[in-house]
Length: 220
Image (tube, rainbow, N blue to C red; front, side, top):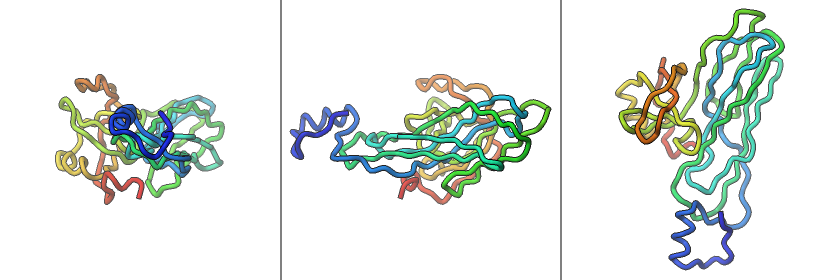
């Protein structure tokens, strides 16, 4: 991305910069990035590695970036956090989101609450001495879009992160979810072919509801 050399930019040059992504002005502002969605086995075995996935929105347009995403384990919780940088800029109107997959191993049996800086309920992971792993459960908030007969779902906004396809979404929520943020709980179940979006990981919806947040309200 190019840094502007002067406040005045010719119209043609500005159009080129917008097409490329963004025209930054000055230094970026650092702030907390929301963690709105997770996926993990509800039950795991002590000492066995597994993948923990999480994601969320970064910026409504192309002039935001994810700086860090962290996962920390305490005696009773898994703590998730992220930081972003946003710029006062002229940017392409393209949502930026993030998706992280981290391999972790838990060495002590117990129940580990999933915690973030928000009030979103993201469930509890159970660690046992034996018994193996359950299937992958997904929790959290995001936005949807229809494409090639699929209802696509993105953590936070549908943007630059991994995009999923929802199977079994209530028809009433399909209309609401294009304007409001949905909370979706389900299980990963293979893949769905979604035209130009390719083969997308399938979330089989167990329950979902429209939250009070509008699509533009993820960051006040």
